[in-house]
Length: 65
Image (cartoon, rainbow, N blue to C red; front, side):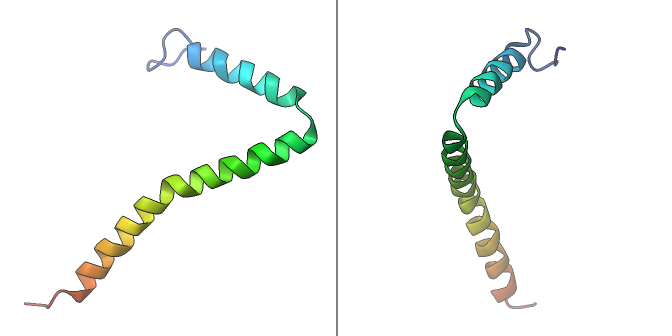
């Protein structure tokens, strides 16, 4: 299975290895990892959300010609 962006399939292999390691971890580790990933994803999207809200705010507050 190859992807034009990853012709060697390296990302596919790495994700398989990470999945295998994750499946061998205890359930408590799964919970911790999921919580941390959720925090990372939210932290990544916060600046985007802030930019969209600020942009919408400036669009609404401009006087109509």
